Length: 291
Ligand SMILES: NC(=O)c1ccc[n+]([C@@H]2O[C@H](COP(=O)([O-])OP(=O)(O)OC[C@H]3O[C@@H](n4cnc5c(N)ncnc54)[C@H](OP(=O)(O)O)[C@@H]3O)[C@@H](O)[C@H]2O)c1
Image 1 (cartoon, rainbow, N blue to C red):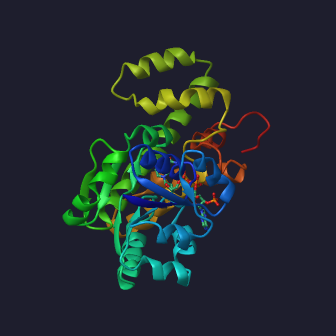
Image 2: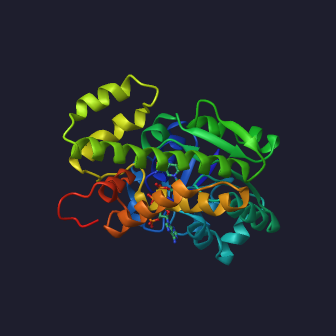
Image 3: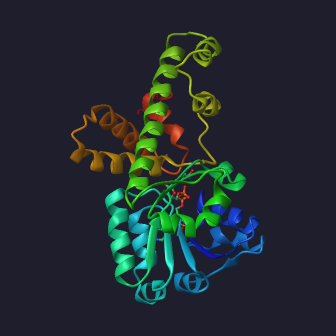
């Protein structure tokens, strides 16, 4: 298939790579061109303008930061015109209502739209083991199955547009809750002078354990958050999206309000682009960082 990947950030770059590796014809566009250039060496075409990428493809895959970024890339008139007769597949994490609005806008100009947010990160994108959640019709799911199978062993059709976006928020709420809870217990263990390995050994043998704890432990112990897979900025975005959507669901989100303020504090410490496990700096500040 001829695919245009819009956004070659942490996730979009590896997704474009994977499409290419699985035999698709790939063109990419990224606002900051330097970030897309390494893909050229893999035989991927780098477009200078969004319209050039859209024109070269039958399907436009969006891996942009948020709804505002999508708007800024797709809303220029020359790009909008090119969307007629083409399909937009939205893969970033945006809110269900944002996704539904986008669908209306794309359909109004004669394009087709579905959403396919993913769980997993850089390694999973490169290996084709992302969890792809599709929001759209059965017909669209079948039409683009090849593309989804490039990224995922078992893509799933969740429901109409908005449902996959909502499910993705439910999962990312868990990412936020787990890292905040782990950071607090680890900080407590350390401040109580308890051996961390003993804490981890008991945790690993228990039903409380989640593999992400072992993945993030070295970062927390060394306070090392460079080379992120997923940034604090985007986790905060997702928490805010969840809180916005949950308002209408009569759910008590008090715990998540607390996590949002921890993530805001982390961003205030200059760690917006760092790995989201940097929330540890807000939970258990190093001496002198004043968080
Ligand atoms: N990283 C992950 O593991 C992961 C996993 C699942 C879902 N996601 C979601 O996937 C999306 C992308 O994530 P990411 O980690 O790849 O983020 P990222 O590294 O921050 O990349 C964001 C992308 O959006 C572009 N962008 C941001 N603001 C823009 C604007 N105003 N106009 C045009 N382009 C703009 C960036 O372009 P520049 O390079 O020019 O800034 C870049 O291409 C997010 O919604 C994220 O929540 C990420």
